[in-house]
Image (tube, rainbow, N blue to C red):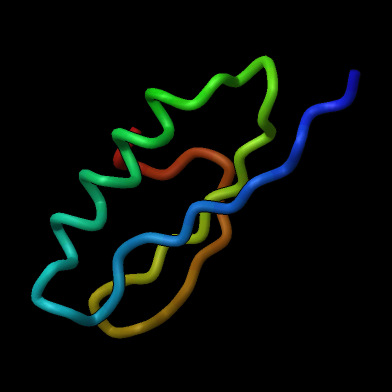
Length: 58
């Protein structure tokens, strides 16, 4: 059975940037990696995006 691909977008320009990083970390740690292929998109505090498979938050 193939894995379902999901995306987690985190970070951003808001005051909640750090909270978003922690939330993304929690999702990545909790998700069933046998069922899901996770792609991560981090957005820095300036609003620039970076597609990554394993962000520094993990």
